Image 1 (cartoon, helix red, strand yellow):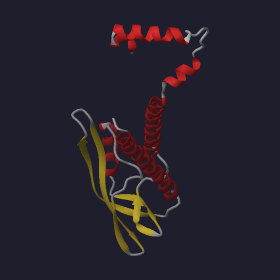
Image 2 (cartoon, rainbow, N blue to C red):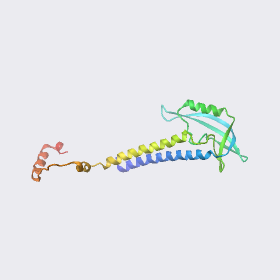
Image 3 (tube, one colour):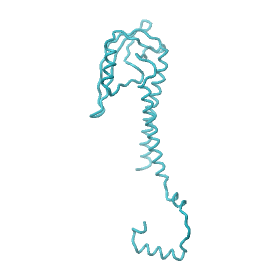
Image 4 (cartoon, one colour):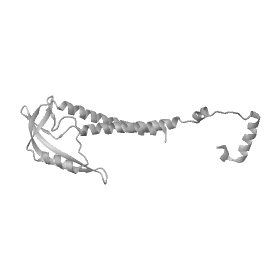
Length: 192
């Protein structure tokens, strides 16, 4: 594999890891800031469970909502349950969240006073945002390990071994010619 291709591949994986970690940290920061946001009553317009498949056996469930709320006489719509919420693989947990939200006519909506279009139903740092950060950091550590192994294998040379070999007695230079000609006669297997 060419060095440029390896660097490109590792670079792409590095960017993905940094992106996921950054997104998770941003979700955590926004969740933390949202704790101080004001709340208003909101109307739950719709609530449903969405199912998506990333492979034959992996199913992701997420609760999708639409709610409306008023700030200073202006009506807004929101669809965020919590910052960083992307669903999960546990249908029972998704059903429990769906049951809680679908039975609600009115909900507390936390909104950003500087940008009222930004809202959430659940504020504060939760496992969803933390999971994103943990995954991103784990990804980066894995990529760093792969990169380290690759760099170390590229830097490996016989010089490392040569410097550690202790020679107790050397063949005199006049006998070295005889040894070389014997190797030449025996074929390439002994030369290597």
